[in-house]
Length: 409
Ligand code: ATP
Ligand code: MG
Image (cartoon, helix red, strand yellow):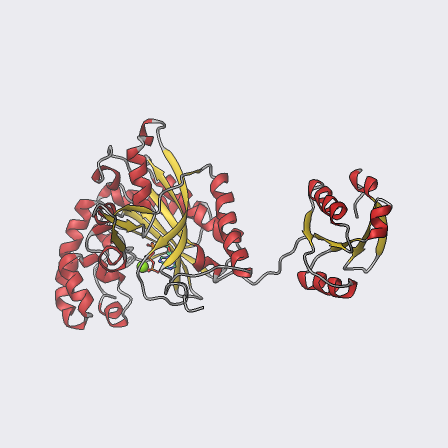
């Protein structure tokens, strides 16, 4: 076939699909244990939503967004992230009127036009959570604990939680001045991207992945030295709570995140092994208001499903499958046997394979099934089946009536 999938867009199947489900199920179970409610958001939004929230000068909006026009010439975008949509939905559906605070989670594909490489795709999947209406740092601590719980539950090791505070608008303004004057002195060492970032969005320079920029900014002033009294207290409290919860964290004064809407707390769970960010989040206390809602402090995180999959071991499918093998013209009977077993709660594969017993049992082994249920004409005449335990090789004839009574091996 000469039609291939689009670059950066992947099929996920076999053991990768199982890992995908392991990540999403584990996260969903924990989100439910923290009593978050699901919101199912559209994949397409007006491009403007992301320009106004993620930020005009961010890489996501400037370079990575899939933007297109619909038949009426409206500028739409495949969503590059979920927070903007969640905030839009929160405002549009007046969810703020229902409760003093709101906890939502979402799951689904995101789209970014990036250079594809390991752990970086153009369609990838996120699970995200958002808390609306809470300003205090115990909410930040709980959210980071949730992130930590997801990683622990998945058995992922070698992960560090990095935290930082970006302060409020006033803190940022003061810090920006100090940072700009520092960057002026090392301008010659910065990459061309960072030179232009300096003008539009100097904090972004701290986020640059280019080695030269990293070393040029190593001695840059720290934003945490520019926090006002309240922001500093928020940050100190957060650290106190994280310690109380026993979460190992590392302060990273250069952590600024790639989106403009963050304020105060930002955090990332970083894999030392992969050198990639697995889960990232923070506060965005002004965003709801900026998008036209009532002033509402908020915070959230997003987890990269494919990134976590990279850290999971390969696993064989472990299920006790009953493999029903019909021999001869017995389908009317054998289909009912399969149905009965399924009604008893068993996982049943009805063999579509043709061929004799040897071939069938070879196939059963390949599938890794636990029991072969042999249904021939003799079994049918007697209202029976032959059940072979593929592990022990043991074989016995059983009456259907016995099965119905739940007498299963
Ligand atoms: P990075 O610095 O790795 O580009 P980011 O800052 O762009 O990440 P966020 O926008 O905060 O990432 O998204 C949250 C998470 O989504 C990331 O931590 C990562 O796990 C995942 N993610 C982001 N971009 C991609 C991508 N192109 N492919 C796969 N996963 C991604
Ligand atoms: Mg990115």
